[in-house]
Image (cartoon, rainbow, N blue to C red; front, top):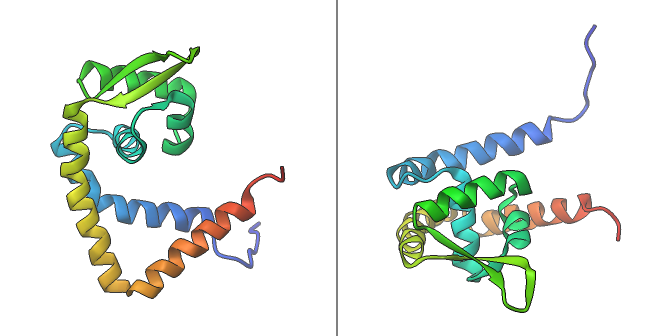
Length: 145
């Protein structure tokens, strides 16, 4: 027995879109021995500087237990440092090392070039529309306060 769906499978389409975009990025990440998760952490740190682990987890979409292992490997590889927050010893602050920031800058250049290609291919208005629609969808699906 099959079920008839009226709408296309949006979660699958979003995953396909993510994989299509990441197909351009992964070779560069692998060249620098970075996983997707490690890159997401470095991207957060590159955008915001030193932040607490809770913010890294939220913005990099990595669950706490997984983040602990990712950060341990990144610290071992001299990509990040972790320290207790002087204002609140219960919190841990994560910061990219100079080596980690060098990777952010290097990879950021090729990633930005890919975004520029997408903008040129789709058009500035369509790419802006895509970003806007995704932002609206994310906001729509957030639980009510």
